[in-house]
Length: 285
Ligand code: 2AM
Ligand code: CA
Ligand code: CA
Ligand code: CA
Image (cartoon, rainbow, N blue to C red):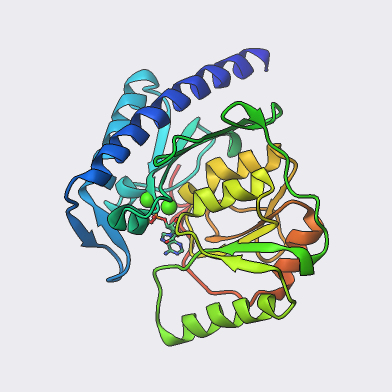
């Protein structure tokens, strides 16, 4: 166990260097002209930079750790497996906040999570615009630029700042549920609701205590893997919107400073249904 611990610590050092390097590439790419196209829906954007940065991260890590597995947003889009096995697995979002990136709106991050035996071991998130680095390793605390993080202790929903994100689905029925959920919370009444356009940075704000709770439907394992470790190590709670333990592939999450706050928010939400990410799990070794 001690040997593994040292091994994952070394991997995390590599992840930190990788996130910084990738983040600098993103920062440069923001100033260049962007080649934008769409994926599943017209509002589901992707740029050449998304693919380039993911290729850089995965090729560099694969060379260092040839036996490890890699799940990345843009490789998964090409039909590569998005299945978590017991093997050491890197879970990568090369550009979180692609729409922000396209608009040069300064909320864009590189997110690198790492799981072994399906348990998250560490997470690294780099804010590409201001260079803030969020890190955590299981059992070793969460940090922002080296300073220890602690979640908000606020238990009263009427004093909460809530964060969420808008998914790519914009059909009327989905929007009705989205707005209904927001109405429910706004009339709680919470202090406020914010949508910043980056799931990973929003989750980092739960870890720092800048906001009390976060919820989202439709997100993927690369949006949550790194951040989940950071929030938990900052003393927070990350669960499924059903109240069950977090399932990285469920496309649902609630995070909060406390379990009570997370469960309260979860109870207010009507779910938006998305297909699981590991739809073919069980059919492969
Ligand atoms: P991305 O920029 O890496 O695609 C706002 O769109 C936030 O939600 C971003 O962090 C975005 O990640 C993430 N997101 C992407 N696809 C989504 C989806 N289908 N549903 C919900 N959130 C999604
Ligand atoms: Ca995307
Ligand atoms: Ca993302
Ligand atoms: Ca992305």
